[in-house]
Length: 284
Image (cartoon, rainbow, N blue to C red; front, side):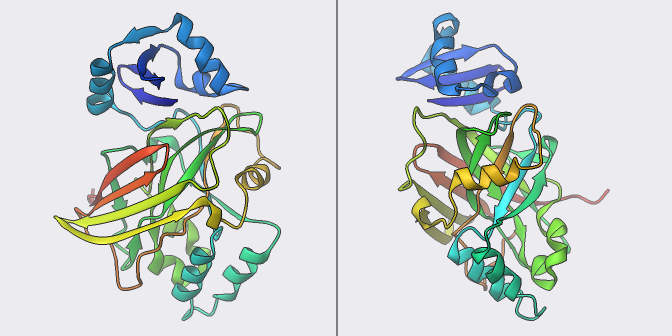
């Protein structure tokens, strides 16, 4: 099933039908067994036509986040490790990425508060003080307050590679700024966990020209989703759950950097497609 957050209410698409669930987003998604909860909620939910549901989604869509924090994991794929090593050669810090890839403890970092998150159809920013900017398409998991993975969405962990490459201690500036994260278009809530063969796809357009295309599968990830979630919850409490971006394997060539007005299209099997346009924050 797919759950969309809109300004008209929460739209659930399930078994070819559309339902309107009038509950707060935080309360709705933070259930011990979200799939069963939503199935039971359908009994008392308002049934709407598919046309009405599609209209809400196409014209009133919001990012699928309430008051949750967004966190991210790094160097969870071999290609990501190699890319980080390449970008940090001149700084002499390349070895730290090799070590964290092999270590028991994963790299986890804070990514965004909800008010800085863009959704499907929104804009994502690149920094004016960075010369090398890329998207990072990532399966993003929703973990409820009990630490259980209950839903999935598409994440874009925008990254300023020139800044992180200069010094790993600049990671917060390379990763955290206005509209540096995007989630969408919905929450995908399957009855069982998402298959390891799930595909992740990335396309980047400049005008009508396809600048980059790549795809991978979750089987390429070194760490399990459950492992990443357990490390995040070791010393944290999240009263309404949280979102965790789980790393990327799709890295454009070193010669590529995003330009303003580029369009980023990320698709994940079973979840859907999220599109964002690249922008630069206006000076105030």
